[in-house]
Length: 468
Image 1 (cartoon, one colour):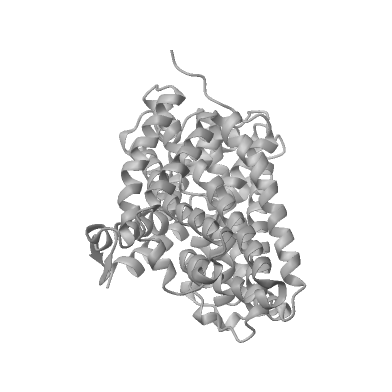
Image 2 (tube, rainbow, N blue to C red; image 1 turned 90 degrees about the horizontal axis):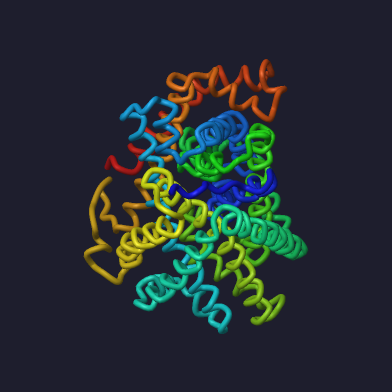
């Protein structure tokens, strides 16, 4: 007998879960640094433009596909295309992508757990050394942390949509927001914090170029979980009486607010404790900033709050990042689980077990890619650079594929499912949608401007990463 599909208990449950999937490392760390290096408020303005006019329509399209079909990405593409094999492959790409991104995210989350433990036992000063990160990621003990983390994640997923994903989001998302606001208010009271605020919020349009614009769209697209199949799957759990355009707006606002407040936390903190900071020296990599640079900033706080106080603040910050990573990770892993349930007719317990085995198989070589194994550390080479297995997963699935999957969603909804079908689904729960300016914009842009921009970003990323 086929197991009944889960469903969110309310619109709020959907919003918190979707926001939890969106809020992750990109919001909490990468966004503030990209903004500081690329014109401050000028970058923010471009980012918000892309959220409103590019990402928001794609978000609604993905959610509508899921709710209309009550299926995962493979099932949604297949059902709406009447079983067309090519479109079913497009859906499969939206399953493989989150699966491999989960591998990347799992490894980083393991590192976060290790750093929280190390700081808690009084080793913040050790972590602030530049060489420590390389030593931490090469520890064989990481496998123990990996096992513990995977047990936690899959226990949550065994709880299903309401008892697992939604319950986690209802607890962690308010907690994350409270921690972020509290840490931000603390940092803003420090001397020299105003320098960071000025650097973050005063626009510098002289730094604007095509690369920055491309980066802003890529950041916005990843930040909102687009191109991963998450919103298609979550749409399949969304009540038909609820309003998709309104709920989507709330998810976008929540996600963008977290990113904005993260900027108000990180940049003022950096300038408060090192007024001579050159932001050009900051890494655009979330990994580089979290594990190599921020421990130094937190250690410098000991002159104001003592070593114990600096350690407490550091634990709180790393816990905040861990919560953000955990909510994203649970959401990402749910996508292939939903596929196994729908397409293979497995029970949730068997689907979770299958996904646990598959993720472990791929996470182990990723863990070994930064010094534990020479084979996986120097796994391949492209773009004129030697790459590890971890780098390969990150570059292909985290950096490259997402805009292309978004492109396929736009083309599919416009020319295969047809805009009439999309409008009909979006008007369910929102009778004011039909004939509105929003519908006119969606119908115009989804098959023209938006796929063109996404394809351009995809091609540009390919040339930046893979062409020497």
